[in-house]
Image 1 (cartoon, rainbow, N blue to C red):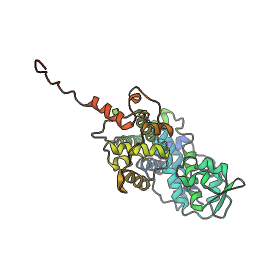
Image 2: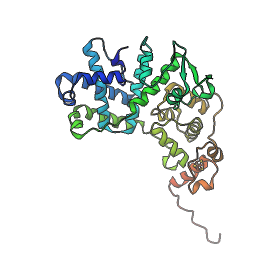
Image 3: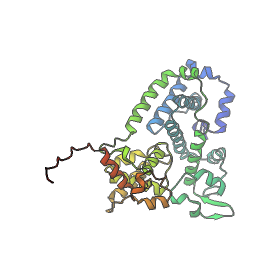
Image 4: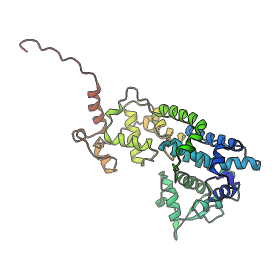
Length: 340
Ligand code: SF4
C-alpha cells in the first residue's frame, strides 16, 4: 500500500507530522509550489467532479501527493462553501475507491484505519454495527440490513462491497472537521490559487442553478421546495421522496437532463443510474408516472407541513397550478355591456 494514495489515513497524517514541515513553509516556500499546485488541482477537479491520478512513482512525487491533501483541505476551508466541502469529500473518496481497485495487500489496513475490521480473505465477514455505521447513507435495497445474511452479529460482504463501504467511510472521515479553522493570513497567502478556484466555483454554481425556463420555482409547494433544498445540500433523499420530486419536476415540463443534473450534489450520485431512474419515471418504459397525492406524501413522511394553500388542495400539482395562476400577468377584465 502506498500511503500517499490514502492521505486521509492516520498513517499518512503521522508521516506528514513526522516530516516536521511548518505551515508557513508549506504555504510559502518555493520547494512546496508543486504540492500547492497539486492541492489546487485536487480542489478544482473536485469542483468539476473527479480528481485525476497524479504521477507518484518517485519519493518526491509521493511526498507532493501526500502534502497536497492537507493543503487542499486548507484551500476548501478558505473557500468555505458547504456544497464545495461535500463535493470535495466525495471526490477524494472516489479517488481512493479507484485506487482500491488496484490494491492487493493493503485493503484491510485501510479498512482498519476507517474503523472497519473485515475478516477475510474475501468474501468478508463484518460486524453489523460497523456495517451500519458505514452503509447507513446508502439507500438502495441491497444495502439494507434486512436484506443481508446476518449470523451471530456478522454479515458477509464481497470485496467489491467492502471497497464501496470503505469509500463511504472515507467520505465521512474526509468531511469530518471541515471547514478547518483557517485564519485570514493563511487564506491570503493562498490567494494565487483561491482566486481562480473561486471563479470556477461561481461558474459551476451558475451552471448548476437549474434553468427552470417556463418553470416557476416560486410556485413550488413546500414539500418540493424542501426536497430541492435537501438535494442542493447534498443530502440523500429517501426513495419515496426522490420519486415524488422527479415525477413532479417531469410533470411540470423539466427535461430528464435538467432533473438528472439536480442530483449531482448527492453523496451517492451515480449519473448513469440516476439517468436510468429519471428516464424510467419520465416514461422510457412506456408508463409515465405522476407524483403521489398529498395523503400518500404524508404517509411516507414527505409532507413537511401544510401552508394555507395546502389546506385547499389534495395534490402537489394542484398547488403548483394554482400558484402559477398568480404568476400570470393579470388580463384586463372585459367591460360589461349595459343591461347584462
Ligand atoms: S399538503 Fe401536499 S402540496 Fe402541501 S406540502 Fe404537503 S404534500 Fe406538499
